[in-house]
Length: 517
Ligand code: ADP
Ligand code: ZN
Image 1 (cartoon, rainbow, N blue to C red):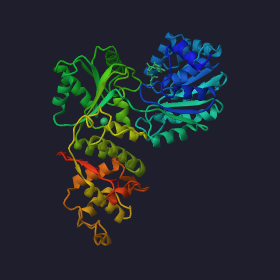
Image 2 (tube, rainbow, N blue to C red):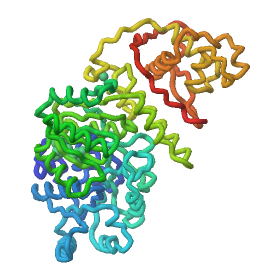
Image 3 (cartoon, helix red, strand yellow):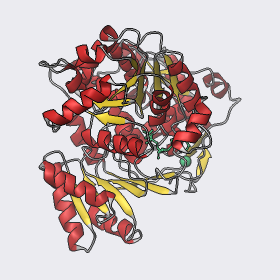
Image 4 (cartoon, rainbow, N blue to C red):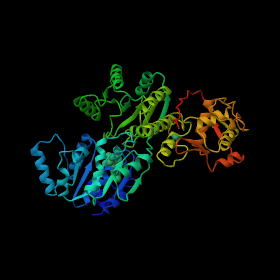
């Protein structure tokens, strides 16, 4: 049977999506694969279909029992024999499962990583007696402490390639920036892996950021326009999820709270109620959502600033899995940025702190964008995207622009004069002719020193951000971030290229300190 006919026969779909077909072919050729696809993109099929075609057992590693249950259930419904091993099973159930595995009656076996490699475990020796033909690792970013969802038990998966050297491994995730991708490949020891990155654009999700003023009032306004729709509201703290859910109930909304501190019974009850649409609004911490496959979530609101773009994108990605238009709303306050900045510092781990701060900084930049948010998100995941998506709040707002060529020239020549060796704050202080001792004496003698004194620090930050977004400047530097010119800079410096800026509205700027060099 070809992959396509299996797709039609077992899954009832007429065509492959994204790079499913190429991914599946690589797995069938026994090659290791890492596949990055957006939430709802169809990752599961990439190992489920080979599992059906291959003659043997596919092991699926997954972080959450709820997720495994769902998948096993729907596979069995379609007639594909699948099972999962969990601690709740009694000895008789386990014995039956072992029997079925021995008789090749199971195509997919779902496991949590700690089940596979837990101490008193004899599972690996047993699995080695079976004909294992594929190992799939779902939510593979959980192996990276640089990702936003690190699970230490995932680190044990480094053993997989040692125990099953000849079995192809397919690692799947919906979130991984370049750093996390590299980390996944290294930690899993994948052999000469084929890496597939699908477009991460979720065209049906509209992104919007508004300044947070009276968040409850703002929220009620938003929810009143969506009374019958289902949505998730993310809060930073457990306490505020419960308080907000109560307040919303008082206003007549069907809302419940969800966070990791609730007991399992309450969590399961609230989650089920949400899935069944008895509860319309889930007020949750980021503990809620992974593996929850609810297709008609119409909006995701972040009432507090997320810690990084990866998390934010994953969370907003839970809206609109059914492909219908959906909303991602973020309430932004610079105060939140300050709070998170405090949390991002991890004592005694400079490198980790620096990475976290940079990620937070990118999140703040997103909130302050005056260019297409979708483009920024796509660029963040190293994907090119045109500058106008037509459906984020920035693209939908008419901005007044002005000729900023002179301003751009000042900034670029300052960077050039400083030999492309300094960060944003230094360049701004230099442009503004700051008397601070931070500015080196020899720099104070340069003609460019102080040529931008008439522009406020906040405006300079905005202009430089804009110059980076438009590609006339770029961030470089190994040890700490510095501003560099780009191949496009010369045209501006020579007056061959005009640059436009958006006229300033009065915005409060969060000032995130650059991490210390
Ligand atoms: P992910 O794990 O990437 O978030 P899923 O594997 O849960 O996404 O797939 C999302 C939805 O898309 C599921 O309902 C799935 O059945 C469906 N799907 C997957 N592949 C296809 C396809 N080729 N054609 C149509 N629907 C598909
Ligand atoms: Zn846009």
